[in-house]
Length: 174
Image (cartoon, rainbow, N blue to C red; front, top):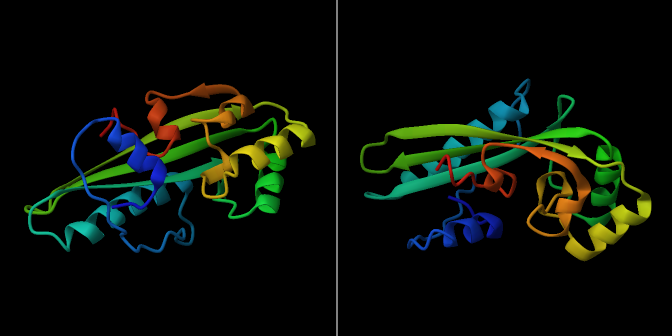
């Protein structure tokens, strides 16, 4: 239940057949909802949206919401926002909350889990930020981070039980 090329790449690692479907779910946070809660709600909403269209399938939904000091950090969408976002995150610790839901379309049963990745950014210069943004163009990534590429150099420390959660789909939890 995702059109993310990053999630698709992670699933391809498993060597199992799967299909991709767009869940068309509004990804806006609800008023007063924290980032962790948003990631869980959206993962389940996405999986249930697709499961409702199918008679017999296991449907995976996932969503990632970054949190810096209680503030949601979204996808930048463009170069200027990515540069501004990374400038603000320089030297900060961000928690990437990745929710994953597995729905059995036949029974309607759902299991939801969240994996958090605590990521401390190095203190970054403007030149480092611009070079990274121009090379990786992380406009569709929460917090402007593509850790599977050059984005790994943005960090001083990453703490998690599942490194794939930072990419957007926690395979260990799944």
